[in-house]
Length: 554
Image (cartoon, rainbow, N blue to C red; front, top):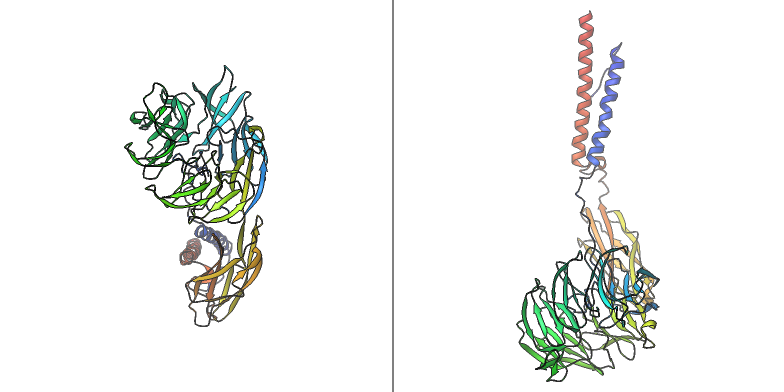
């Protein structure tokens, strides 16, 4: 379109109108370039990695994280965990390790092992720890144990270590805390009652009892199982009893996914206020209706559960893998003496246990995968696969160690990771394998591309020693359709596998412009045309008005 130059007074007004109208075009373009607003998520707190003893209140001692394939000691510190029945060691969502001790609640940096006093009160020792979903840390502490003033109190602490609430109990807290799905806190005191406490610290209900070291565990439906010195009792979440049987459980209760209760202890005969054992120490598998499903010789520590239903039981001189019906799957000789804790099972059903030879990893088939000379009891696993353990080298609480076996690992990267190629061209990228935490294994490389037309070739199919570079060629061919292709380069070593993505955009030589004119989307083109139309209308309207005024004066 061609405009003749206006003359006289029309010229300045025309220019003014043109400037005003043209100023609208950038705003149109800017509006079209804005991303649609999305609603922000409400405040969210990631769940803790290991929120209670045994990982969960079923006390399965299993995690959906893969453990260390080639472990290396990251650190070992004298945190002196105050173990009485289970270790008061948990892991927060950010990876911080919390340890209950005579010096209060200790926090440990997972990377450096630096310890800090997270919370402390004079005269109080922390024997039990748990973490709620909002990050609140629950500490079960005892005051002046061994004196006439001793008693237990449950403290609620903010993620910053500030005390939010406390509730005094009538007995000492030696058993570990259980947390239900609706955040009820269950505490079974030693020779004292069972307490149900809300997440804000108020008492929901209490049952008079004489708690034993079997502690408390929850089923998936939040049925509460609590052990005393004379009975094992099941409760509804509201505190109403379901049943009670004369079994004295003296090791941590465990509940399977199908509701079967695994209890280590003695069947009791008649007695007033105490158990008169009428059986040897036994591992009982009890149905949810309290009938005995099967029973076996008792292990030295509470069992651990595999993801495939396997029950792992540690005896003094061997490890046994049991089917869910109690029949033996396999056993292997191993001096465990693991009274202090259960083993830990990772996402690959690898069992990590204490042994006299050191911490030992055992595959689901019953074969030793690796042994580390650090002698300790596995107690938790972080999101990065770091395995945490504790040990008392001199048999004294004050010398108790907490250590970390780092999950040695590797990272796969590709540089460059984005190409724009014309059909018939080739692109070149370097695939780099970088070790983490001392990894030195062989990494096998493979590649896939989607859609599958480009041809990908790697100069080598493996990187030995855990570190190195491999050249990758991407051939898009002459007849390849235009579009975007994604190359996935994967490195694997044992259970470890990591990938890196490379984006490839393919164009044709003659395709200088595509449907998105000048790089603008269709919507932007329409909005630009709308802006230009507004300019034209504004200019023409100004010209017509000014000419009419001129004619009127004439």
